[in-house]
Image (tube, rainbow, N blue to C red):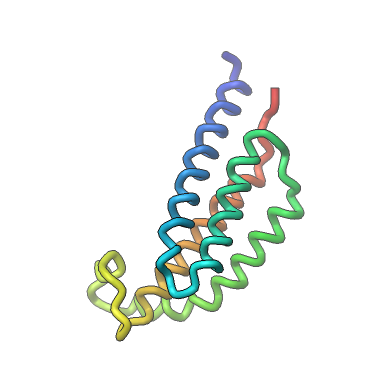
Length: 129
């Protein structure tokens, strides 16, 4: 196997893992107060990760999605800062507490950050053979 084939195989495996991860993210959001927003965001990212194994995705389209997600994440950044200032960071992994909106806001911010990273990964053109 050549180096290009190894890289291509690795990229395909990573994209499949990202696809599965974002599909799971999307379905977990169905019990969220605003499920369609998050299901759509994670669904689009999952779809892009899957399609990238078979077709080249326009870099312009990727940049549009990345910029849109970064802009949308600014809405949640203040919650992330609030969470960063608390002593018990592990609360982030517990249940949603309505008296602590920074928990859900931080989760949403971090989810958007992960989505941006996954899309940025797609900017590197795969080798098709």
